Length: 175
Length: 142
Image (cartoon, rainbow over all chains, first blue to last red; front, side):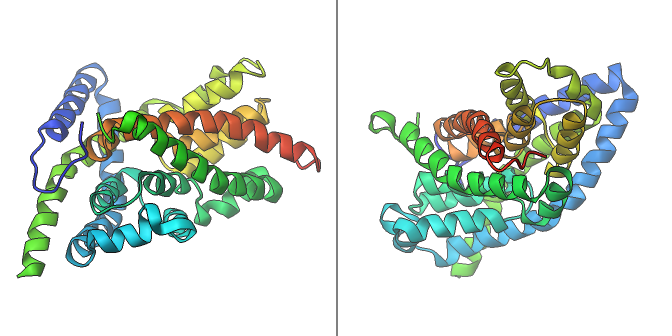
């Protein structure tokens, strides 16, 4: 399966949504109360997600308008070096909203020449939630929080490089 | 005209991803509503090797805000679940996403998505062991 390309129609998202709606229909029959509460939570989630969705749309538009493959390859490609890792991990840490909102932007950047390892590192660094640090300290202590955060940042490089190796196994980028 | 072309192109790409995002959000809503927080404690048996794997597996399947994972993790610690298992659970919660895997496969490519999630799962278990090992040195275990 190739990553989605802009303008290319894929029926899969609609099939996926259809299957989920069928599951909901089944839940409505078996446990109407659960279905109603799930719908209420869905509505609340949608309200939370809309600002992040808007941000991703804006970034996608900006990438398409201003970034050329040469520029992306320079900043986030194979030749980007330590600066590329720094950009990807820092962007991952500060990015907000659910992870799946960022897939289209990363796919777009990869089309423009972003290194797979940096895309994986970006996604992994989203594990570091700076606004939630006080809560983690409350539950687990500052030492645990500090050690875990350092490990997460370090492992983002491991996960990035390993994902890239697997993806490019046998010289193939995609299945 | 370049702006208009980019806006149209982006809107088309975005419309493709909307059903996927709606599907993932619906699944997340259903799972977080259906599975009570106390259900997680029942998964752990006290086995030193099996529990971190179970923790990572539970974190991979779970969905929702990471805040929930801290609250559940804190409660699990309180009822005696090992710190390694709780750490694997918390890490997998934020780094592995089975619920969003179909969306990731569709947009980022099947091999990338499967590799990233599989490696992140293994790293959650490995990292949990390492974090607890490091914390054992200065005696900083919570």
